[in-house]
Image (cartoon, rainbow, N blue to C red; front, top):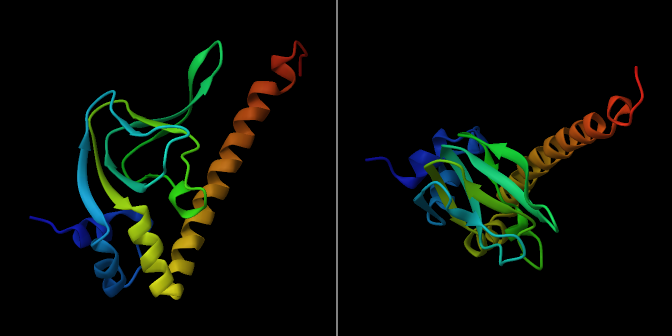
Length: 158
């Protein structure tokens, strides 16, 4: 049976980290299964966890008044969800809903914050990884907005 450290080692987010760092972080994690329709996180609720998606699909959604939930992004095995645990006031910005059975590692936000305080070099390494993913997702959102609001969608031809 694989340990949490083994599962961290296998996940792309943690590739390249020293084995001692993975062992250090493993105590913050637990292996979780979410079934179709389950929420990993809810918008405007306490953000206490960071999720490493191992398998399955997760819809990242926001609620739009008079329209309902709007899927902004679909996550798959190898993706991560949640960095709101890292920044006060620790409130989730989005819903995360399992679109099918999802296997994930769930790491406790407070535990991770404490580990980062104890080992600032590791904390900085994790921050760089979160910043890279946040930048990639912002770029992707920008491209989606350009596609939605581009000339072809405003009644203009190209």
